[in-house]
Image (tube, rainbow, N blue to C red; front, side, top):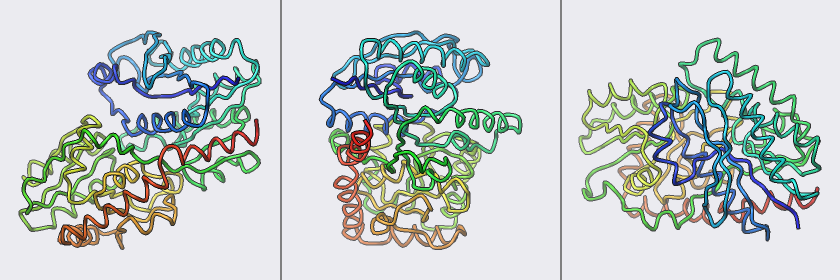
Length: 406
């Protein structure tokens, strides 16, 4: 029997509140959700129990996290016992420690097997170095799931030149070790060209729909007033993601029954707070829990992704919020990005034009539809992703690929 492991960067449920209280940096709930969806889907295809070897996605001590050392410990979730990797979290030492400890955990996890499969969620330099060293010792099939290219994983405009240069150097360091990867799961077809991996097996999985079960305990917030039109954005508040264009477009709407709700953290956070002070129709919630986000989505009139197709990185990403938005059954407004496959064209309401007025007009158009029209649009999107992009169907692509090479 093969041993199957999943090297992840997520936050266990029981640790979530503690980790959040110790962090001063944004936490990617969307990335954690995607990893859990992948895990759940893979678990349906493999008879073996899949163990998670997890490195918590926190930033360095003391600037971004209050603990200098992360303790190794086991945790139970999804019916199995998993491992949280321990490491030194002190800046400049953390990556060296992380790579060493990941390697030790991988060797321990595969110590009694001759063959197996290792799924790796990230190719960050510490992870890929550990995997490369491990691969020299063990003949294990390694499949990398690349949701973000290393040099494009943090697009904050507040990063200094030195920090940006450091990220580029770390990214190129990661790419030097890609020879240890046997197969790839990519978010877009463009990634294959960028990484020059056409000679290795790969499949495209742009995301996984939110499980309908997650909505069973969700109580919609905001629908008590049938006259109110709620426009919601949940995600990173980086200028490159269009949050300021969204605010400008909303401010051009004169109707008093419109409300803009914003959730998240990022380099535009202060500007969002300033906009909230000037316009009482704007509500800023900061970073909130995933359950609270789903509740706000369920109560919204329309969900907006204001990221425009004007940056190179749009070729190499499929916004996770698009999949989550569609899963909610609420109409979705977005721009047509290079990374969005054509099959989504029937379920996303695209903005034509990059000026704020174009986004304003599209938001008014959708908000002033009848409730029946909006419900039909929302249900069409929800049924599409629940049917075609659920965890079992999406991970089936991964399993078929792996079975053909192992």
